[in-house]
Length: 226
Image (cartoon, rainbow, N blue to C red):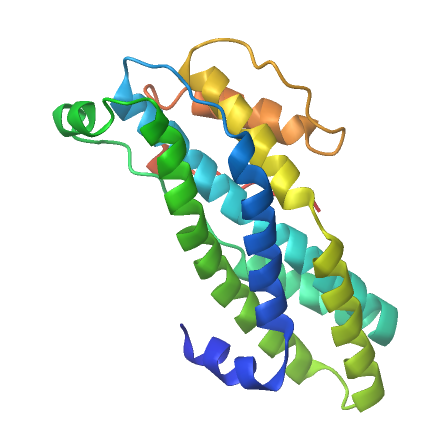
């Protein structure tokens, strides 16, 4: 954990609320993960890695968006604009490894369920890092706000309530995984994304399908819905 995250944790429930939201959404999404079938384990693993990074960016955008809305409500458009600018500067960048050891992966991924298991294992790690980045963002944002205890308390309450009810990450984990399975199996997706996420997953599928032609490490593939 970074120094900023450690400094912020004792003073507020905000980082813990982020962690609880991530954990709840992961638990809700995990039982619905399908099992893709592939004879190309290295390519499939690159696609899973890309999905993990994209969902990490999406999760960052969800929480940063809630922070911006709360700041706007209690402190106005000016401070909220500065928070959104800081969020854009802090947002994680995706760099997915472009090469894997195909022979090693062929042994590791004998059972197709290992691909879903890899997603389940990797997402909490990625989201923990995102949580640290968000803790730094919150720390910097709140330090820059006027010293108004009642407004700060109301801001914290609004954020906590929003995160307790937000289930969008679970929805997009499932939607993203179904698109990933389609790309892994080289077929059209069998799921219709929400209107807000439709362009995200359409573009993501196009990019993920080109991984074997253009290494993802050369591009920033973090995609978020504001």
